Length: 118
Length: 133
Image (tube, chains in turn red, purple):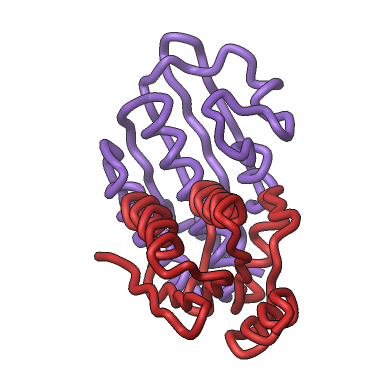
């Protein structure tokens, strides 16, 4: 199943609603970059409120897609990281350095607008 | 007393099946959401190691009840190439797959007890337990 990517003005909105398997995660990486290219989006919010765990593979895919988006000129904010996810990521030893995060979708959009200077 | 459930790991979908099994057992035993996430993540890492390095193996979940303590034990067994230098793979940041290198030291931090047994050419046996507090 593909993760839907919605366009809102010059931003893209993604809400990951179910547990990511490897294929879905990699497909999402490709889909998001294509969509940034098609829409000239300047910012992306990826909401992971529904995700209850992140392993090193998913963390790598997320980290990679953020760097790839940056190369294309789009800024990415991750929102809705659950307490259990934050705890396990740090214990696992995964650092998502330089990744913009916000508590929820609303704050994520605000942060993105500040970053983009609108 | 032990009740065991196993998933044979052959492909990426089996990794998903293994962590679903683990999460269900963790819930059933009464683990909270943070421990459920720790257990699910540990299973995902161990199952992925089997898939990446050994090609195939077994991931089993034991429900433990020892001296009034309830626990969940993850057993990851494969007959792959084995690990020549266990001390090295237990160092943070060591990875041969180009991943994030969270690997085994990360799994050890997520769980309470961790034991690894591996012989080159014979395979690897990893056991990690989380106790219900």
